[in-house]
Length: 269
Ligand SMILES: [Zn+2]
Ligand SMILES: [Zn+2]
Image (cartoon, rainbow, N blue to C red; front, side, top):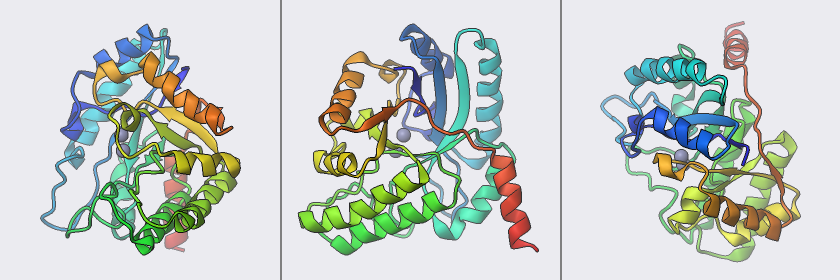
């Protein structure tokens, strides 16, 4: 493995270890590019505070600390700072306004909730046989990818659908086709694999292979030990091989500020 773009920090409240421990592990495993993508701070409805994301005031420290480590380790490894984020339509614009203070190098989409994490919406991981809910997940993911801000789709198969297989194919084909047309890689998530979650799921990846999707392996490390674990990488690569997926090892970085400025000028002509 040459690069891993899916790495968390303690700021999301469910990851452990210091940033330097993640970096040292990556170097020891021969990684050339390490991207931090902690759960992004978000603007939320008044009164809601997420227990599994960094808080807005923590972003300054996240960027300044990791940028300084990028300098310190620059002869050994290339380090980027991004976010893993959901797309919540109603709060997207104010959230971008906040992120603009510390422009991320890239964003990966992780739609852990379909619509919202406040107000009682279920997590995407809750099993469902409701094809309409699956359709909503796919609609939101496509809308997010269409913003042009996301470079990768983390665990695209996180929606835990247990209903009709034909419906699954129909909706997931829409998602995969859009990712292909936007040239956005789909992530084979090693955390899901090693912790035996409902993803990565074989029917999804079989379809992704048929439709010519690009796949990327993401460690989703919440612990330094999980950066570039050789057995996990091997198991992830086997999924790609089994389904004839083109495995890539880099994602597009974005010029966040340019994209953000273009959005601002379009919305205020
Ligand atoms: Zn995630
Ligand atoms: Zn993650």
